[in-house]
Amino acid sequence: MSDASVHDVLILGSGPAGLTAAIYTARASLSPLVLEGEPSSTGDTPGGQLMITTEVENFPGFPQGIMGPELMAGFRDQASRFGTDLRQEKASKVDFSERPFKVWVGDPAAADPTYLANTVIVSTGATALMLDLPNEQRLVGHGVSTCATCDGFFFRDHDIAVVGGGDSAIEEANFLTKFAKTVTVIHRRDELRASKIMQERAMANPKIKFQWNSQVTDVLGEHTVEKVLLEDTITGEASELAVTGLFVAIGHRPNTSLFEGQLAMNDNGYLITDGDSGRTNVEGIFACGDVQDETYRQAITAAGSGCAAALDAERWLEANVHN
Ligand code: NAP
Image (cartoon, rainbow, N blue to C red; front, side):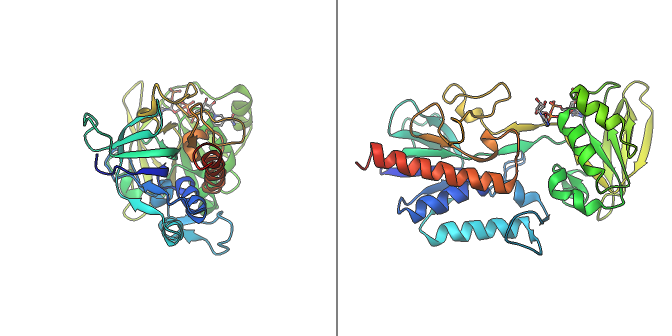
């Protein structure tokens, strides 16, 4: 075991939820340890999704807007200031079957865990699914986006596209018509998966067009998006669509594979918490942020739930460990 002491609070993840939980528990003198995660080619982002966002204009307190990475650096500094121990490490295995809880970093087959903790706050986030296009990652934040609420405002009077045919894609397309000149929904079939009412709303919206049976094969542009390349899924015919924005709305994957069989999840893999609280089905394990929020997925709601989970953990420690 590399660290034999039992930590009062171990936080997994370093987005707005995890770092807000760190600020609160650090100020409560609980010396939280945060495993921030490690950057990886599979989409893991220490600091969370704001690290791959450009300007954030809807986080209260920043009337002129703030760059996503700068906002997260502020969260991090604030957590450090009160004594949070931040480590660029990623949990590879957890055992929540008994207390103290066990967390491994590195070889999951190692006999001894790396860390022991009285409470764990899970804030591992969710990853927006991407299309894996050759130029997609390069243009994220420069026309390619996975969040209409965050970025729609930047596309006033532009011609843009949304990829996907589910509720998220149709909701985003409807929302984006507040700003854009036209929104083309690019879907790989000729039938939407979205609920009827959302479909009807979109079909009735004169700014929304549909590009059926089409798969995006690449997104092009030197500095910002200029066009997308399409392939007809039936005939294979190639075409182009001139747009300045590409919103990818093909679903999110919560980062919960580590907790399978240990924490209760819904059918889509999101952790289930009790009512408005951060309590999971295992006493002493709390969850906050996008890993347990399929509905709102905003930085501010994640931060709010991080605060709630921290207060829940603090009260639980008082009642069960420090009494
Ligand atoms: P979803 O229902 O899984 O839909 C994903 C869409 O993306 C599908 O139309 C799918 O096409 C398409 N897609 C997936 N992979 C693709 C790829 N590689 N290339 C091109 N297209 C691809 O995901 P979601 O829309 O994010 O919704 C997730 C859940 O949240 C759903 O249960 C949804 O009802 C719910 N939700 C509800 C609301 C609301 O009620 N207001 C809003 C948002 C989300 P196919 O159809 O061909 O599979």
